[in-house]
Structures are given as structure tokens and as C-alpha cells.
Length: 429
Image (cartoon, rainbow, N blue to C red; front, top):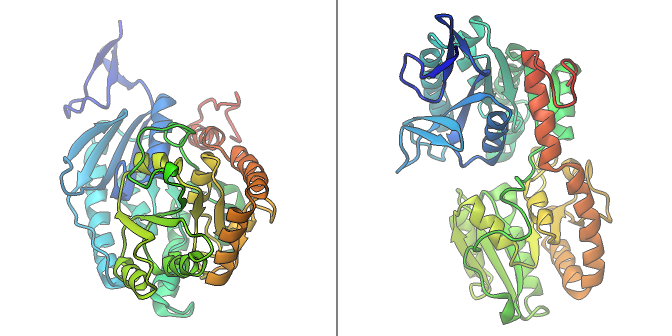
């Protein structure tokens, strides 16, 4: 007879089966580690819930934000939060926070691994060295996945204007190589990142692309109540930006473009959602250009509100400037707008051009407000042409939709575990 029970640690999330007085796991046990808040990080949330749906027990170790509990259960995912306050600041501040979280996450994994061992530990960067928090589970047989959301050297070069030969960048490159070597499998979200990591020594067969794409359960054509923007019945032509408000994301470029077109598009409105260290400068620029009447800043809102709001706007704006990082990045926001059938203006960068041709998205030259203004005017003046571009862009999105990426991700994990994959094979998923 098989009886279900909680583990000896009292955790109801890791059930076991008792068979002839022996204990065995019903399903593989997966630990995830991320230096952010759960379930706020969409990629981590999608991947954790995908593994739960596939029959695995998943535990996430993450940061604790004000008002959240130390332990939680979110859509079947067991969440353990570490009370570290994350503050934006200097590289030294980030490194201190990383070091503290690495130690505490490693200790939590050690505790959770006692008596009921992990089969897989899935670590999300940044930082890369967070993968070493999985040392004890790895020594007891767990497989380790390192999910490289972003290349740290390029992020630091772009964020702090550090040259590639700087000692800090050389150190980050060294730690990246060691982190990749430690892991059994590497995941990364786009082809440009994959190429970069391979060029820096990651074995080609070790790295897999699982793209950042919208969860269709959240981003579908009709979704809830939008965050407050003006009604379409007012006749406004509504632009939207959502994401982290940092200098490299080019909100100053977008504001300048809006200032250039406001006399032509009399009913234009620009709504901005997000938070970051560039908010004050963004607001200063809005005031300096005299566009306070057409630019509305909403601050940070939840992903469900973002998805609902997109359905009520006319154009999504991705105003990224060009840097060593943004040139190879692929903003998930592109697919979020296309999932709702909305035109999107994006910078002509390598990371985006890997997926979109010139007739499949509305490109502009990064950092050029006049070219961004021209792209906005094209959409406004020629809606039929814009609709044709959106249709082609949506086909690109459909080729990279979450059901396909989800199957790819789950197959990678199943392959690590030697389980049958979605395609029926046990190898090469």
C-alpha cells in the first residue's frame, strides 16, 4: 500500500510515498535560486510553474520584499524568501548584496537538501556565481542548471560605462567561465547571447536557448481590467512604455520623440510604467521639453495590469539606446505587445534582427529621437501598412510562443533526469 505524507521537516510541499517502510520521492525535486522577488520575475515564474505542471516538486529561494511572507505557496511552487533588502547603487553595493545572498541561499539549499535530496538545482543569474550555492546538492548527486538571463560583463559595461579591459570586467569574465564550467546545463534567452557564451568557451552542446516570451495565460487578447489610461473613446493616440526605468532603456529618447510629433499628432498620449534609477532624470526631461500634459508616469504595476493595459493602447515603444549590452539583448516586451496584436517600435539591434526582418517590425535607429518620431508617424499616418507589419510580426511571435518554449525547457530538464521527454525520447531533448 502507498501512503502520502509530509517530509520529516514538516514541509507539505515535498510529499513522499511510503512503500514497505521505505521512502521514495513521487516526483523529481527541483530547487530554484534567484536574486529577485518571486513571483515577480516572469521568466522564473514561467519555468517554475512549467515544472510543477510536468509533475515535479519545485522550491524557489528568493529575496523577500516588504509585506511578503518568509514562506509561501504560489500556484504549486513552494517559496522560501531570504530577508535581504535590495537597493540600487554602486557596483560595490551590488557585490555586497550578491555575496550575502549567495551565502544565505547556499545555506537554505543545504538545509532543504537534508534527508530529502534535490534532483536538480536551477540557478538564475545575476550574479553568475550564485550557481555555487548549489555546491552541497551537487555533491549529493543533484544536476545543476545555470540560467544566464543576461551576460554580466556586458550589463556592467553598459550600466557603469566601464571599458572592456577594466579589472572588474576581467574578473566578471573569469567568474562567468567558472560558473558555466560548474553547471551541467546552461540556458539563455536568445541566439545572440548563446553565440556570445559559446565564443567565450561554453561548449556548444551544453547551452540551450529558452526564449523570454509572454505567458499566454496572462498575455491574451482580452485580459481583465487595464491599469488606468485614458479611454480609447477619447480619440487619443496612445503610446506605452513598460519596463525598468534606466538610462540605457532610452526613455529620454522616447520623450524627445513625443515632443517632436505632438504638433502633428494632436491627440497623442504617452504612458510609462516601471521603476528604476532613471525616474528622476526622465521626469526632469519631461518637464524640460514641456510635455507634462501628454506624458503620464504610473510607476511600477503588476504584470497582469500591464497585459490588460496593452490591450487599450495604440503603439508599444521599446526606445533602447545602443550599448554593448542592448545590442545583443532581445526585449521580451516586443512579444508582449505583439501577443495583443499591437504595433511595436524597436531599435535596429543585432539581438532583435536575429528574429525580425525589416518588414516584420517597426524599426528605428537606437538613440535617434528623430528616427523614433518618424516611426511613430508612419504608424499613425498609415494604419493599413502598420496592420500588415503587425501580422508578420505576430507570425514571428507564434514561432517562439511559450507552449513551444515551455516544451523545450521541460525536455531539457527531463533529459538531465533521464526521464521521457515530451517527444517520447529519453535523450537529446
